[in-house]
Image (tube, rainbow, N blue to C red; front, side, top):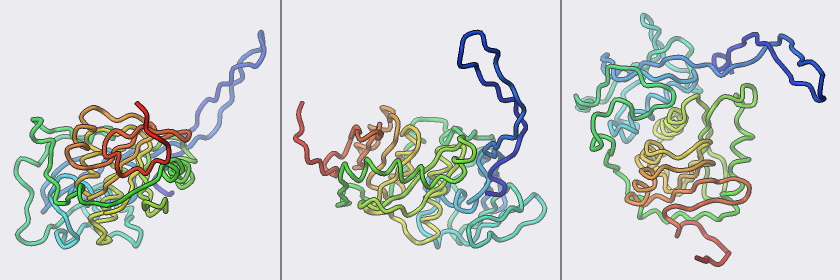
Length: 292
């Protein structure tokens, strides 16, 4: 977890249990989730700057390019280097380098980033579509046909996924301050988990890992996110070929609209053995009778 957390002294205040008792205060060490900028360059030119939790930066850069419709297969990326502004180096076996906060991407010959895509401002850890100038720019056409995906998942499997994801969140256990995205098979087997201060970054790290592993499209898979399901997360799932997106919180109306149009099954409020299935209900094999 080196680089993903930061230690800080805090004043811990506890209110008394009984009336008239004074509050208790003591200094203690606390772990915070790290948040640092990551600049993504393509061909040596700046593309975007996002605030993220360091780690899996190669996957984050690759996943971002998938989410923007720039790349769709491993061969589209000739290489990604992590730089500190002066030096660059290859990532280690786990996708981490620790050398700096710039991901320099080289695309295959003949592939380039559209001029309108380049953004000259910082996106925060809560923003994955900042900088878009029109609603039309939000929608990126997918190369995968989700409607043809025959994946089926039971409510029982879906209900067990949040506990599986929480158990795999190593940094959250220490800090309590990170979002997570987990990729599962339709049978509930955990394939990958990524954490980040940004919900969209956690998903991009999953998608980037899948791209670099030659796993796209992620047919037959379920993506679980620890927060709400926004438009941007639905689009990332669609562009990665994921047929089922589940969230522990609510989806937005635009997210549900895009899911419906794309043939994606969207599940929200997945907690405590219950859930709402907003779109693609046929993929969820419910044993109970459906009543109005």
